[in-house]
Image (cartoon, rainbow, N blue to C red; front, side, top):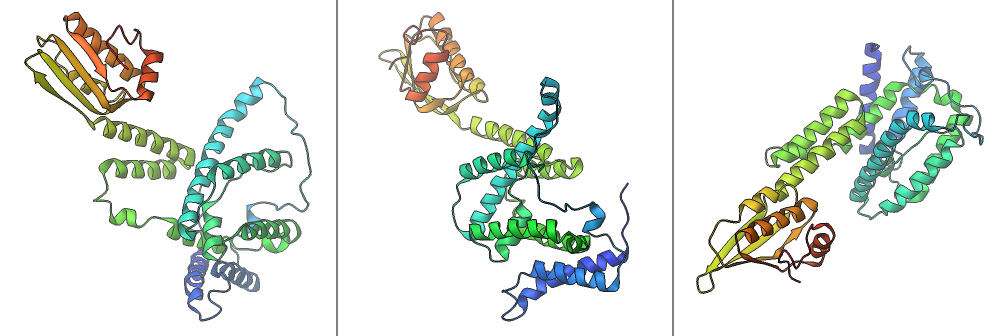
Amino acid sequence: MTERVGMTVYIMTAAGLAIIYLFPLIPKIGRVIPSPLICIVGLTAVAMYMNLDIRNVGSMGDLPDSLPMFLLPDIPLNLNTLLIIAPYSIALAIVGLLESMMTATIVDDLTDTPSDKNRECRGQGIANVVSGFFGGMAGCAMIGQSMINVKSGGRTRLSTLMAGIVLLIMVVFLSEWVSQIPMAALVAVMIMVSIGTFNWQSIREFKTHPMSFNIVMLATVLTTVFTHNLAYGVGVGVLLSALAFANKIGQFLTVFSEYDESTNTRYYYVQGQVFFASTTQFLNSFDTKEALDSIQIDVSQAHFWDVSAVDTLDKLVMRLQREGIDVKVVGLNNASRTLIDRFSIHDRRDIGLLD
């Protein structure tokens, strides 16, 4: 059951937002000292001085009072243990990697610098494995903290190193003071991060964006909000994006033909992508009942992506051959030829596929 908060919390939160957005306007010092830091320190001092009865960090649980130690997990090493932890591990890995990639992309845009995302993923995976042996939980790049760091002037690895060292010192050695930070101050900071992270232009361009884009965006947001699980939101978004992409690409397939009366031959020219979503359109583009001596299918401007495409080409050629029509398929690119060599149920020469 959600606990109701008093008016004091709303006032403190509003005061924190005022500090965050107005302090940078002060000449000279406004850009030197990060406004979120001023917000946290200032509201903490006010809460302690006035002895306000509001929730603080200490209300959320006990903070550690010692450095972590190396320990092996005391769990049974069997299949049942793996089945218990696997769903949570997979969900955390998906969310962690995606949030790290999103954070890296946002930071790259803000700082106009490139980042090695593969290196980030490798480092994150190794660090999470090592962290488990010290009693720590898995982590990833956080959008909120990264936004605060960048907007406060952090541009190099030194800023992240100092953030980790200072956090360790504060949690372990200054936990008594950290526990006094009011949650209202942290809420104000996170509201600032949410406002700065949200792509407001997406709302202004809602009518101009493709409908599939809007559906994916809304479905991802609503799923995440109502399930409180980012993994579900990401899963729904990825699934809808894949379906929308397949449907869109499947429509970019054209087949046109020319008839040569002197040889009673029809030349078909295929342009576009042939895969599971476009195989029906591809097959229906050919008249297999036309009285012809031969057919040549030029696929130099097409690409066959999967087994369904190969199977459809097999069916087409065999249908035409059953009608006594000589079939030749020309223009296969190397990737399509390799796919057909591997998955076609007939030899390429037997079904009219030429190099």
